[in-house]
Image 1 (cartoon, rainbow, N blue to C red):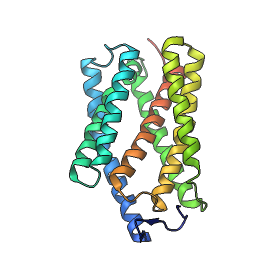
Image 2 (image 1 turned 135 degrees about the vertical axis):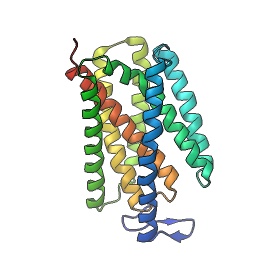
Image 3 (image 1 turned 180 degrees about the vertical axis):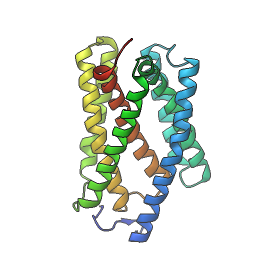
Image 4 (image 1 turned 90 degrees about the horizontal axis):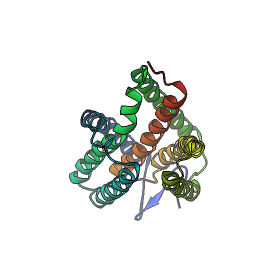
Length: 229
């Protein structure tokens, strides 16, 4: 069981210094992970390799490779290999983001929308980080509900490949924004409380939250704020 002030893992109590070290290392690796993400998105937009695939094939590719990466990262999280695998994963995630980025860049104000989405993601991160430091109660019980929400969302995404419903897609995007904002609060609070002792695993969790928040914001901005020549 996690406790708001400290946690017991493997017979050792994580003190404030240990928790702060994990948090600092997580933030540092998270900042570095943005570089391969941007590089992957640039490669994807430049080559059009992801845009040339159908949505169904893209989803299969995404799920297969991303879950493979996450499994490998967790298996190697206590070694330098885990860091390299994480950076490789963020490059792949940038590559998968390139379809959306390319579509937004096709708008006359696409560059501005990407900047706004990035600023919005940073604002959500700052707000959730501040909230995580203020909230004193244990949020570990949120994990089950958030996981169920993520599974339902994934099922909806797969279903909409066949349904092609604009209304359902918009609902999915809004739900994704709310769900992963809550996930971000949960993950940051977990790290701060000592519920995560490995900074590679912590970075992976926070990165996925921010990735989905950015993707959701960019999609909404492209739908409602996009301008065409």
